Image (cartoon, rainbow, N blue to C red):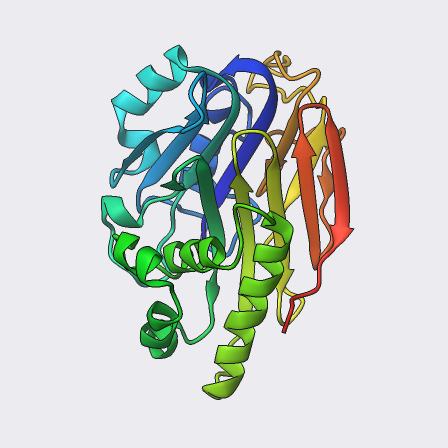
Length: 271
């Protein structure tokens, strides 16, 4: 499994959340506290929005804690909406094309979890993509294929519906193939204006996912890192041990966030 965070709010330097908090994303890459995979060292990525509609993207195969370029970039890049992801592979290769976030046009997508029986379903999933999106697949992960399924299921016009149609499509394919393993996911999607974050599992055992509005994460020195007073944070696990303001997203729910505003809705796949 993986760990990730998504931020939207007033512009902040990325290192305020990627590096500085007590349980920062870098700390989680070494020792996650709420994951079956405590080490997430199979690559990393950051994606951020600034003045252009298309996001910037930096991904590499090194463990996040071992890349000096990541620390330097995060100390210089300031963004109003960004994603960070540290990867623990569920079987696919450690390669840059398999690192999250994935980007297409103005969209960013990242994922934690797995499609049950993916190796059995891989061919059928690929053939379910539109020709355009089939050609755009670069890596070998279930996460990237799911993102392209969403793109072909009306993502540009209806992000919530694209999530529901794509999850339903995958579940139907798993059922037809006689796969008993579950589909489990937490996933985040953004067009640069809003963040859509899903927590779902077919067996009601989805990975952890939390959010906070205006939460001030504390650093290892016990002091707030600052800069997040009007922000929304969605993340695999809280950035500190204070437990102040971190809210667990229920199973089978979709969160929609813009700067300073959050709605959490029940999620049902469209079969």
